[in-house]
Length: 154
Image (cartoon, rainbow, N blue to C red; front, side, top):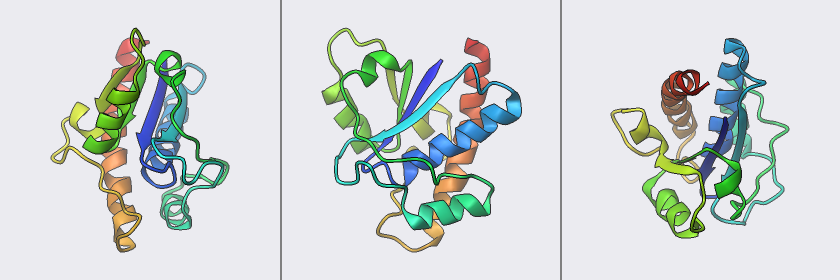
């Protein structure tokens, strides 16, 4: 199975989700069966590491995002990945407009798919430091649901 997380710039929310899911897959012994990646709908940060505040918050919970580098979603992603999960409704709309006809990927809103109390992961980039903690809380919860879905598909 192949999963792609998508946010706006690929330096806060989607790399966080990639790191969280990678660790959960490792703990479950499924890391060899699932490919995980992240991307952004925009190209402003291509090639850059995740935001330092993102990495700091993730590191405090045991996630290492240092090796990740931002990239932009490309048309081939809609054929390469089985599941593409958007962090917010704007990202979802962008993905739906970019999706080529006949592409096989299922595109959905990450939190809504796993029935969290909120449907979107808020963008912490311009907010206070605790926004990065909130992002981690939401992503950890949603990744638990995603892990259950992955197990049911394998």
